[in-house]
Image 1 (cartoon, rainbow over the protein chains, first blue to last red):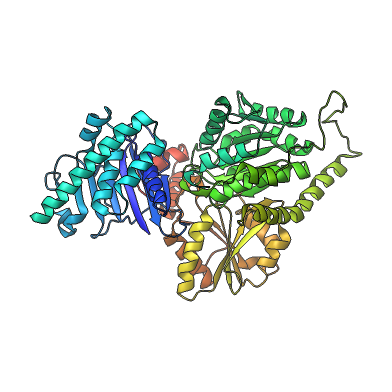
Image 2 (image 1 turned 120 degrees about the horizontal axis):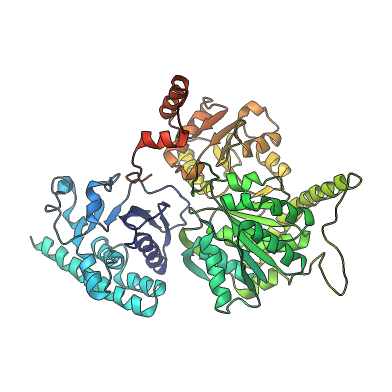
Length: 193
Length: 417
């Protein structure tokens, strides 16, 4: 079982991101379970959503306390919420930011992590450019696809097209494609370094 | 057809496949997505003929469902928590009148303190109202139970409540196999009411009944529910023949054959319990699970049979009879041939408290070792409770309890589990 925890704020599409990820995994023939942290969500309040992916039916209903991957949609949460709780050093971290882990003050924290599992992507900027709204979720999922290899970009885009009306979907697909390319380039650069 | 959808969307689609003719509902979390989905289908003309009636309260929702059902329409509504309590008088009337209404209860705690999260206290508060009460383990079963519910309701002329865990199921995206219209039509014939308000053949429904006959009417309600105990497994078999999967019935058993310890529960927590049981089985513990799908009528014979070789029973329930203990466990005890001392009650998950494998391991291990108390509150913060009790002893004006506990724990947004 592969478990993903997504942190963000109300209004950033955190719950939708987990749902999209589950649809993308389903389209690849996997079992998937997405669920929100069930808060009284308000715009701007910290929100958590979860997605489990497995090759067999998923029965477990507890929150994801030991994630294999973290997607952080809002880096201002880093100092407010224990976003890294339960993450093991071989886990994946994807943060929505144009800064590096070091610039975010996370250099020491991630020193024991596999660099190939760490990734930043300016998803909000990509969303503003391609969608016209600060909704970074689809771009981040594409970034997650690139860094983890757990799902394909095609499945993410198919999930986006299933979930949103055509016009909104195309903007999100464009943002997703750009984010995927960005992460692939970043990973190649890291591999050369 | 396999789909990856939200539980509420799956239930809305399944209800639509049952061709309801009147849907009336008042929105309340976490039921809202179900009736929103149905409302969209009706307004888009995808579900026709069907009238979606916006009502001003839950009391009105059930009252409209009663009127519609008595007029011969297949009627559906959904609610949760305070909404169920607000309609309680009409809930009893629907059962007393024998009207085959189907209602989803998206299980949620009851206030005060106000709480929108999941537990079973709402549905269990209505356990004696005369409705059949079915509990879904996952979203597949939630949608399947709705199809079975219309069949059950109309054959017996009794209302059926399908309970699904609020948020945990209603808001979870998971894989479901959505049946075809042909399958549902093959299972669920058009509604032929046993009683109907028909101007061509007038009757009155809802007569006043005095002491000379009230007991007999109530006895017949009880007898009809006991009759349902035979019909529910038969219809689950028929469901399997048409839809090709196991869903519904009275109970689900899991690894019971050689189990010394049996855990009894309702609803979605059964999944987490089964995962925990598998881990304990790997360590050589003979532990199994009894899931109660049909809570009313209470399947006493099936429970007695399933527990016949259990040396100890742990009832894990998301409900609390304040001042007494467990509600489900009280029912289980009555159907357990062994000593009542061997039935343990674990109150868990109240108001949406997460039920984790870690905590389940702990209480199940205590049961194995014979150390589990008769009544346990899973993950209760005893120190906090003690501080509140101390303050109450020391200060006459100790203030409102909920608010003082919130002050003690501080900000909760940072918590993940």
